[in-house]
Length: 542
Image (cartoon, rainbow, N blue to C red):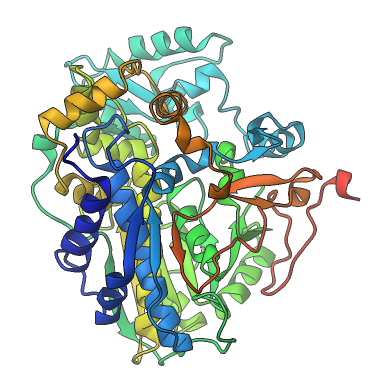
């Protein structure tokens, strides 16, 4: 692949498939800001063992965020368009951010205090093998492949299949589910899981079965609202200084949106609840830059507090199943009455139109729906789907979502309007697929470069991430040897005096300093007020 350039391809995607070749009407200032961008990295050849252009697309979408931020800084502060540097190696590491935070050279998931805090969110013991293997790809009676998903409480899917609670190994648990799923036809288990038990799950399509049209990365829908200028601030501030964001979401994609907005200067409050389960291995990475408020939205007090936060916010990020906020009394019209200038951002798996719009979903579900998993399996020489190696569509959709929010904030200052934003994992995957695959010769070189990587359909996400990290460590050991790729932050809000290292954003602006001002920390540690910091309620701190 000597003639192929990751950096050149990343630039081509940015200019040809996003700013000029996409279906989004970007402001001219975004395009002008993009003339000042430079892609760098330690290796200009592809190295992630996947058939689609994961490094290049991540680099390009990171660049798009930086371009939007540069345009905002010029608009707010009058500074010239800034030189932008995007590191393609860091853009690749960004896709595995959740496993990269460390304390004293070891993973945060080996730190006793942090592990103890994270375990509080695993309400249904999802690390238990009989629960963990509820989320995996299985062969059906009619020889299709179905991605079963236990979400954050495997009990409902276990009930559907007739699987009892038991202490078994991962291998034994996998065989139990494989035997149960093999008794169903694909269409029947898909309908039972999604319609009867309201659990995520999807038939693994081939790309040919799914792709029929092209979609933009996101959609902005404007409505009439009073023009809202940028909040007053000093000229040396980050691009989004003074912007207030509510993150009402869990797990990966939507929290990535607010994490990126936070590093650009926005004040982010994440609304969570200790009564809801979560994927706690994501917490250290995805709580970075945010304060965390514990609200019970089933109580009148919690609803009133949530409404008070909305009144003075700029952006509401909604990452729950479609209809959740509406059932809580916060539909589109209610939100507009509370805050006429609010930008309402919605993210889900399938999108907000069509027969699957009401379904819950995850990255793996969209990867299987769109055929991306089949492409990965065939790349590895298998006649079966394999979920792509990293939470790629989660993290990259998060980048696209952050761009969408900046885009809407920019336009909101120019006229009497505000915006609803709709984005989905499937929208991203359609765009990603449209970038095209590596050539057969390039794919052969990638397999040779990662010859010790062996995956099958039964490798679930935690296994995929760790095996992919090991493969990258072997073919690109230098990529993990850059302390400058990480920001040191206090661990006090996790209840430890040890510092935590968090991956920096893959992009840099010449004049705007981008750092996470709020350190990562435990759930429910903050007061539900803007411009207010709370202490993490952990006894070790007192």
